[in-house]
Image 1: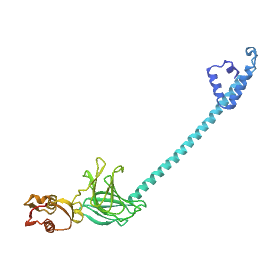
Image 2: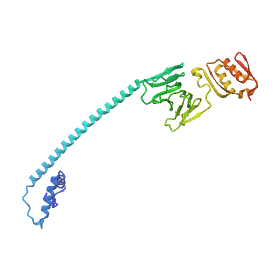
Image 3: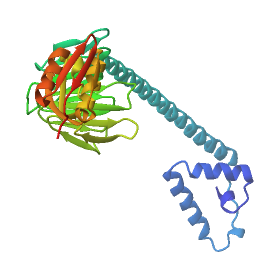
Image 4: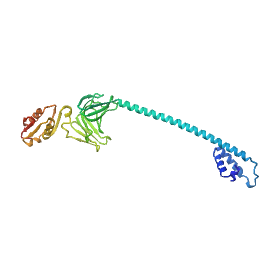
Length: 327
């Protein structure tokens, strides 16, 4: 130590002394005391060197260093053992979480009910809350065996008519091709075909809210109104000019509201495979408001003729309508 203090140690010895000093606070105190004692001498150069057994001192220093190295190795081993133990606990927890997640997912999957109408329509299918649904051909709907306490949610792909049981505490939600339809109790038709560019909602009774996925846009729809959700732009809009044959797939119902006879006749020609002609083009401008449910073409034409005082002639699949038109 004295040699180190007066600068007579070589590089290796100096390194060992510094390491010894840094081993503990006690070593630092001892070295500092020794340095202070040495510094009080008036002329350290004339002090007779002490009879010190340097070999013995060196051996003691090495023993101290080896002892520290052994303690440090044990400490590191304990740290590695603790790290390994914690890693095993973490692995067990991760595996447990994965098992629980898979089990939870499978349980949820098992709780789901799926209805599919492939080649024919399914009518008046009952949901867990008593609501009724009818599915058009090629339609599927998915819902839980029991609805949650906060909401009644179903997922639809295709076209379906809903008659929802009122419940003010649990809104009825239909997710259809990203469109969100929310109601409390009403009757409405949803057309959400994958190949279509839009989802259409037609309200027959009650009040319906149509929203986009982020609910940044929404429209309230009332009786006779149609809501449209555009898939590409996430836009939601409302139309008052509804599709007159929107419910024809369900109950052969045609709904006309201030509809020109030109549109009425085109619809009847397509649905009943007939040809309808007029002798006066003014007839086509007449506006019809009427609802026909499961009626024959003869009954529909008879009803229209009565309203607008028209005459009809029928030959096989051809119908001729005559009259003065509408004012």
